[in-house]
Length: 339
Image 1 (spheres, helix red, strand yellow):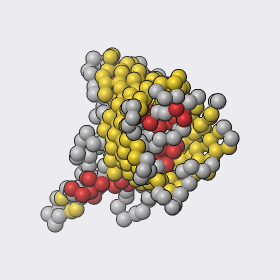
Image 2 (tube, rainbow, N blue to C red; image 1 turned 90 degrees about the vertical axis):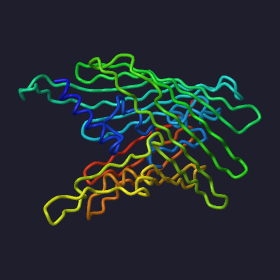
Image 3 (tube, helix red, strand yellow; image 1 turned 180 degrees about the vertical axis):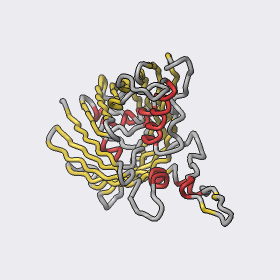
Image 4 (cartoon, rainbow, N blue to C red; image 1 turned 135 degrees about the vertical axis):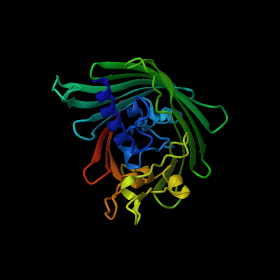
C-alpha cells in the first residue's frame, strides 16, 4: 500500500513542479506560487518591494514597514480535487528595524479510492500538507541592502503515513533607488525531516532563485526577470514523444540543447500600472512552456496573466496560468490593510 501511495504522490508532485525537478523530494508544495500576483508574473518573482505581504513567503528580505498590519489570503483549485491556499501577516514593532512576519500554506489533495496490492478495494483516503512560518527582515544601516529569514514547521499526511519537518529560507535584496532597479537572491527550503513517512529520510526541495526588476522611467511598466533552480544546472529531460524515428524502426532520443536548457531557468513578467489602483500582469515561464507543449499544436503553455484591483483598504488579485489544454489554474487573493 505504501509503495502505491508513494508512486501516486510522486506523480502528482511532478505535475505541480512542471517536470524533472519534481518527484525527487518531500514537501514539494513548498515551491508552489504564494499569491495570484506572483503566479501572474510567471511564478518566481522575488524582487517586489512594496506593501504586498505575500512576497515574504518567497523572499523574506522583501519584508518592510509598509506591510505593517497587512493581511493577505489566497486560494485556488489545482488539478482535480486538489486545493491550495496561503495566508500572510506582517507587524512592525519599530518602523526602522523591527518588522516581523507570520504565514501559513496548505494543500489538500482531496479524497482517493484505496486499493491493496491485489487490486481489491479498501477504504478511501486523503492527503494534505501544510507549513507554518515566521520571518524577520533587517535593513543594514546606511546601506540599501536588506536581509531576511523565514523559519518553517512542515507537516504532511498521506493516507495513514505522517511526516514532520523544518526548514529555513534566506533572502537578500539590494535596492538601487537611483535607477529604480531591485536585485534579489533567495535560498529556500534549507532543512530536514524530523520524522519520516516510513523510516526513510528524504530531501527537501531546496531552490535558489536570483532576480532583477526595474520600473521604467516614462512608461508605467515594471518588468521582472527571475532565474529559477540555480542549484541545478541541468533541469531538462528528454521527452520520448518528441524523439525522431529512424529507418530501422528505432527512435533517436530527443536532445535538449545548451541554450534550451539555459532558457528553462528563466521566468519573465511585466506589470502594467504597478503603483495604480488597477494593475495588469503578464508572465511567461520558459520551463513550463517547453516541457508541457504539444507537438504541432499551439496550446500557450507557460503563459500567465492576471490583475489587481484596489478598493480603499482592500485589494483583490486574480491570476490565470496556462499549463495544458486540459489543465489550467486560477488563483484568487485578498489583501487587507487592517490599520
